[in-house]
Structures are given as C-alpha cells and as structure tokens.
Image (tube, rainbow, N blue to C red):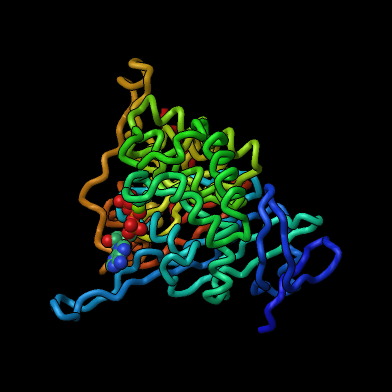
Length: 381
Ligand SMILES: Nc1ncnc2c1ncn2[C@@H]1O[C@H](COP(=O)(O)OP(=O)(O)OP(=O)(O)O)[C@@H](O)[C@H]1O
Ligand code: SF4
Ligand SMILES: [Mg+2]
C-alpha cells in the first residue's frame, strides 16, 4: 500500500512536510492512509475502532502451565466524536486497559481496525490507519495520541526531574532548542495549574494530585488531539479527584481534545463523559449517550452496575432495589458460550438462547446500542 496522507476537504495530498504547532517545529513523516473511499466518512469522528481483538497466548513456557488463549478484547467497536469524551466502564479484568493499549499499539492487537482522524493546520483533516503504521510512523503517531495512566508515580521516572521528563519527549520528537524546550516545559506546567519553577524538582517531592497534573502536562507536550485517560483519578483522594477532573474538562474545552476515559467509578463517568460504553469480559455490551445510559439502561449488566452506585439521597437509597450478581466474573481464558454474561445474568441464566447464541450489539433505540436477547429499558432509581 502506498504511504501517503489524505486531506479530507483540504487542498490535496501531502507526503512529507514540516508542521508547526503550539510554537514547536516538528518534522512529520508520511502516514499510512485509509482508503480514499473511507475518507469520505464523517469528519467529526476523531477515533474509530472496529472489531478490535486482543488475544494473549499463555502457558506452555519455561514455567509450564496450561496452554491457552486469554480472550481479553473480543471484537470491540466504537467511535468517539471530535472534542467528546467516551467513558469505558466495567469490572476489573474486563479488558479496558487492553483495549486502550491496543488502540495506541503499546501492545500489538490480534486484529481489528483503528483510524485516527485529526485536523490539519491548513484545513481539512487526515485519517491515519493506526494498525498499518510501521515503527517510524508509530513514533510519529505518538504526537497525536497519548495516554495518562492511573498511577502518576509509576508513570514518572523517579530519577528524572519533572522538567527533564517532559523535555525528553520534546527532545525526541521536535527540533526545539534547549531554551525553547525549557520554555515549553514552563508553558505546559502553567497549563496544568502548576508553577513553572517546579521543573527542577523530582516526582517524590509532589503530592498525588500534583503528580497526576505533571502526567497530564507530559501527555500534552506534543499537542496531541486525542488522549486516553486510564483510570486517571482512581488513585487520588476524592477532593483531589474533583480538581483533576475539572482540569481535564478545562483542558478539553481549551484545546479541543478528544478523550477515551476509562474508569470504575460510575459517578465520575456520569460527571465527565458525553457517551458511555459498558464492557463485560472483553466485549462492549451497551453503549449510549451518558444521559440515556444512566436513565434508561437496557442491558442487565449495566442495570446491575447502576443499582450498586450509592446515591446521596437517603430516601432513594432506602427504596432502591439492588440487583445482585451471583458468582465471579468468569475467566477470559475460557469464556462462557453464547452470551458471555449468561452465567451471572438474573434474566438469562436459565434461558437456552442465552447459553447458545451470542447477542450482537445492535441499535435498540436511536443512538443506544445493546447486546442482549432480552434488552429492555429499566430505570434504576
Ligand atoms: N500480558 C498479558 N498476558 C495474559 N493475560 C493478560 C495480559 N494483560 C492482560 N491480561 C488479561 O486480560 C484481561 C483484561 O485485562 P485488563 O488489564 O485489560 O483489564 P481492565 O479492565 O483494565 O482491569 P482493571 O480495571 O483491573 O484495570 C485480564 O483477564 C488480564 O488478566
Ligand atoms: S443475552 Fe441473555 S444472558 Fe445475556 S444479558 Fe441478555 S438476558 Fe442476560
Ligand atoms: Mg485497567
């Protein structure tokens, strides 16, 4: 496949050029395009993921163990509109981080399609086939897609001052001089609400919230348009969580960022996400606007998750009937047949069709997709 980029609605095809963004000069390499027919799709979609699969082969090595395949991500599809936030929720081990890491190709997905659309400085947009990118192109892609991890301490090198940690990215990816890099580090620290003078200090000298701000500054160093936030506030105290969430919202408005926001905490997702996707054992089982999903959930799993969210109103809390799920999440090493949720589902546990036939994700109401043979809206008060 020839390597070139496509300007959608722009003045023509670009192969290699020098771009300037946020005062920094970057050398850009040619990117693998998607087909020109696909380039006619909506320009408002910033990220499109189709049938993403990641299977880990386990066991049988030096330490033995049963050989098998862990079906961590089993055909995930979604789109995120430009400037919007999609929340990805689900119990521990359901495949949220594996989805994130596969999208960024921090791990190699087994199969699937990931297309990033980004606006070009001169107008129009470029659609990049992330899966087709080679090593050099992947390095270039890092400028457009970045990730913020849950543990801000683990993601910062303890032996590097924060200025060096942020400046390192600029050094690798840009032609900025030392002075320009140092100015940019100061600019980024200010952007996340920190004093630029702290650039010489080390990660252990900061609180958890400050470290997460530094993590965000680092992720923003190269002006990416798309950020994956993998549990960015889960490790923080509640009061600090609110500050970091506010910062993320402010930055999104200011810089027009698109987010994939991964979280356990449904209250946080409701607060920050425009749309929400619910994952269970490697699959998306329900997806809708956040308002719709929280007020009229249609999948029994989503209904159970929502029924467990505490409400501040004691009267409602007393009246609320909690849907209890029996048993643990099955192992993705040997997922259940048919609907993966059938072993725990209060509705489908004893139904033949649920055991035998996998329900496909389909639109049950405008903009509301559900994978369930018996999908039915149920308000969780
Ligand atoms: N390198 C690996 N080798 C084998 N299995 C893996 C590997 N990485 C992840 N898994 C398995 O894939 C599944 C999904 O893991 P993942 O980390 O994506 O879940 P998660 O939804 O992010 O969970 P959490 O909420 O705890 O972060 C889990 O069963 C996990 O054990
Ligand atoms: S398909 Fe059946 S088992 Fe699966 S969620 Fe729906 S009712 Fe439950
Ligand atoms: Mg995770």
